[in-house]
Image 1: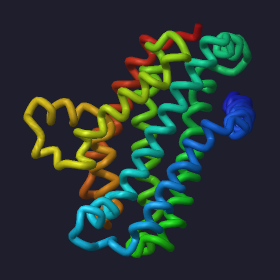
Image 2 (image 1 turned 90 degrees about the horizontal axis):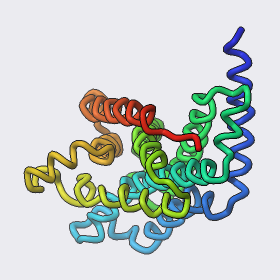
Image 3 (image 1 turned 60 degrees about the vertical axis):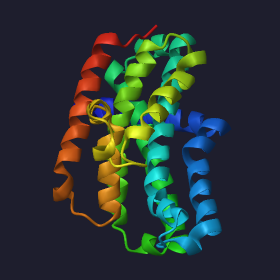
Image 4 (image 1 turned 90 degrees about the vertical axis):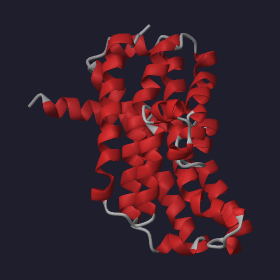
Length: 252
C-alpha cells in the first residue's frame, strides 16, 4: 500500500516540474529544440555529401552521435542548474520538509531529463528519415534506449557537480567545463587508441567514452551483445557517482 502514495507523489511532482521547465524558454530550447535544429540544419546544407570520403561526409556520418551526446550533456547541465537554483533559493529545503521522500524529489529531476531526452532523440530520428539516408535503416528504439542509458549515467555525474558547486551562478559554467571538456578524448573525434596512455586512462573513467562507443555501435547496427562492456561501464560509473552523491549532496 505504501508504494501507491509514493507513486502518486512522484507522478504529481514530475508533472509539476515538467510544466515549470517547459515554461522556461531557454532551458527547454537548449534541451529539445536546439539539438534538432542543429541536426536538421546541417542535414539540409550538407546532406548530399553524406557517405563521401570528404571531411564533411565523415562529419555527417558522426553527426547523429554528436547531436545525441549534445542532448545528453544539455540534460545534465540543466539538471545541475535546476538543483543549484533550488538549493540556493531554499526550494530544496522546503521540498524536503514535505511528505515526499528525498529520493522521490531527486528521482523526479532524473525522470524529467530522461523524458525530454526521449522527446529530443525521437524528433532527431524523425528528421533523420528525411535528410539522412541511413536514418531510415537504424534501429530507432535501440538507439533511443542507448541514449537514455548514456544520459542516465551522465546525469549521475551532474548530481556530483550540483552537490559541490555552492552557487547557482557558477553551476552551469562549471558543468559545461566538465562535460564539454570530456569531448576531445571521448572517442567522438579521434579513436581512443590514438591518444596518449595517460589520457586513455582518464578517458575510460568518464561516462562520455562508453556512451560514444555504445551510441556509435548501435547507430551502425551492432547488437547490444557487442557493447556489454560499454553498458557495464556506464552502470559502474552511475553506481560510483551515486555513492559519491550520497556523501556530498547538500539540501541547503
